[in-house]
Each structure stands twice: as structure tokens, then as C-alpha cells.
Length: 416
View 1 (cartoon, rainbow, N blue to C red):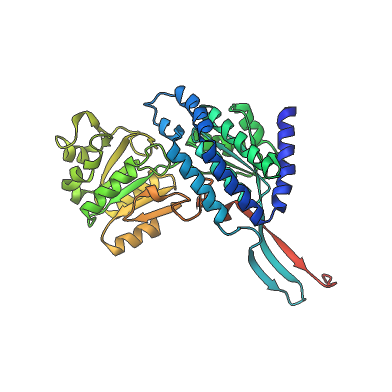
View 2 (cartoon, rainbow, N blue to C red):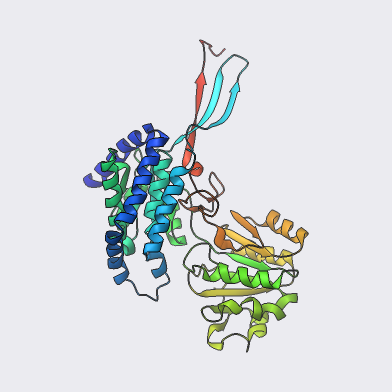
């Protein structure tokens, strides 16, 4: 580990102690001041973002993830205020009991300490991660992607400026360089970093899981399916499919595959009518026949072997035909990633079976998967969408980035 990075990790560890000691009112004041600073310094932040945008092709689906606008900065500031106003996740009594020998035990929520987050071309993550970590009493070390380097650097510079002006330790946030070496050093920071969270595609998540020597939580990769059942409402279905696919194609909750019951193939052209001007469809044999001549020919393709199980992050979507709900469930089990799945149905028994059987962090009935988001779940913001089963699962807010410890009060008892 290089001397400079070692010093940065040590400084973050030291800062985590000072953040832990702050009361919630102080944390709230700092985050509110930062929200105001984001708006006041929006010109500087947008100029830095423009440098990153200039280096990316506008046709790249990641362009939208990288883009900051005045409205998006307003949204970032609003999310910070929401996080600041949330109840503190710290000091909650999770369990409490008095043993027969008189020992009093309390299990309480406490900060992790130092949280490292590795992410790609999403500068809003810089603000979300800091606000959630600071509110939950932890310092954070950020490792953004090369595509967003200028945006992230400007954001961290602003956060440090606000911390100094508020009399707090600026090392509560740190930004590593956008290199593979920096990623490896973060993953090996035993004794300094308490938790690493990767936010990005499957390659990044697999790399972190395979190489981390510190604890990690898998987040991000989403191969998302929606099943239109035999009893599905046509207009609900059309609105849900359009929103799930086109609201923001480059995010992990965007729809990748529409599964349709074979008895409803005649309705397929209407169900995808909101996609005709934007989205390429990769359809299996039955769905291709149903769409042929009723969907733009230059956007309709026959599904190849990789059509299903692909996280497109683009204006592309697969279509799969099934003859039953169990067949749809089997398809999701084979190709899904455990992120978000949905069913469109008016059959209560089918809805219950779908939610019982689908193994995913978020399972929807008659609503689009685009709602998988910390802010939409009332968490203020999110540090990621966990797709693992041990510990946090689904949108990770304040509670999910705290840990716990046991407090034991005695009066001279000894163990026999």
C-alpha cells in the first residue's frame, strides 16, 4: 500500500471517531449546510460535470447517468435535507433482556466506522453516500469511475469545504483516484475500512467479491423481468411496461425482459406501444410473430442466445413467451439477478404465488420496478440496492449501514 493511500486511510479512520461522537443535531446542521452549498455552488459543479460529459459520447447510455443539471442538483440537495431530517439510526435498542443472574443486556445500533464505496459514472452517488454515512455516524472513502472524475472531485472538494466551515473533520470524506490500483488498495485496507460496497455492473461486483479482504455487500447488478399474466389489465400493463423500461434505461431497476402469457400475445403490440419510438425488442419466436408488422421493423429482432439474462442498460428489451405462471417463475429463477421482479395480474392467487416464489430483493404486483429506490421507499436516499441475502437486502438506507454491539451491565456477578 502506497504511503499516500495509507495516510488517507489512517485519516479516515481517525475522522470516523469524531463523526461517531457528534450528536444528531450537529449532523443535521452539517447536511443542511451542505444542501444549501450544492445550490449556491451549482455553477462550479455543473462546469466540472461538463468536463466529464465532453469526454463521453452522447449516444452512450451511461451519458444520462453521468449528466448533472440544475434540476438534478436541486434533487440532490432535497435528498440531503430529507436524510438530515430522518430519525437517527444510532442508539436504537434492538434487543433488551435481564438474565436470571441479574445481568442486564442491551443490543444497540452503532456506526460501522469507515465505509468504502466503489461506483461508476454516477456523480449523484457521491452526495448520497456522504449524506447517509455522515448521518449514520461513519466516515466514507469514495472510489468513483474515471468517467465522472471531475464531477466527483468537485463534489468532494465542496463537501470538505462545508465540513471545515462547520468545524468538523474534513477527512470524514475522501476520494481515491480513478484507477484499478486504488480499487485494489481499498479492498485490502484491513484495519482501516470496515465495509466496502460496490455499486455498478456485474464485472465490478464480481471483482470486489473475489478480491476483497474487508467485508463487502453486493449491490447494483439488475437483470429485471416483468410478467404479464393471463389476467393482466391491458392499460395498467402498458403504463407499467413503458415506465419500467424508459423512465431511465441506464439504472439497475430498468426493465430488461417482458415475459408474456401466451394467451395474451394478441395484446402484445399494445403493451409495447409506448416503446415504439425508442426501444429495440429481442423477441422469441411466438412474440416475434405477434409483433411482426405491428412494431417498427428496424426495432424488432429475433432473440439470440444472450437476449435473456442480459442487463441492457440501454433502449433494448427482450420478450419471452410462456404458457403458465410456473413457467414464468422458472424463467426468472434461471435468468434473474435477485434484484427486482414484477407481475401484472388481476388474479390474487397468482399475485401471492409470484411474491412467495420469486427470490429477489423487491417483488412487485401491478407496479413498475422503477420504484426500487431508497428515496421512493422513504429512506431519504440509498447507498445501493443489495442483492445478497446475508445482512442488508434491497435499498440500503440509514439502518442498513449501521451495525450493532451488546452492552452488558452487571453488579459483581461471576460465571460459575
